[in-house]
Image (cartoon, rainbow, N blue to C red; front, side, top):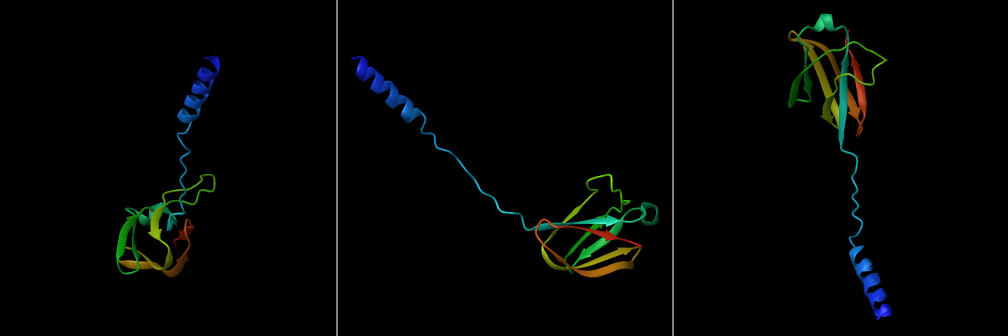
Length: 110
């Protein structure tokens, strides 16, 4: 009786512990980031950014502060991108950038 009860308890513990280990794997998201650096007083209201011919947004210009980890960053897709930055309808920056996954680039404005 004792032996069968012991086997029953061990069997129950074995079955109860079979919840399985749940694992998940994730790859790196294929996005990259831009940060705009300059004198904020020169660009009140922010700058207009055009990525390729499709994506446009308004971006804030921040001072380069090496004490901070990161300022405000903007997410763009990876690959070869034409980045055009304008202020008051005047182009102040235009360059082809190759962006890798999870890469951050600082664009220094004049």
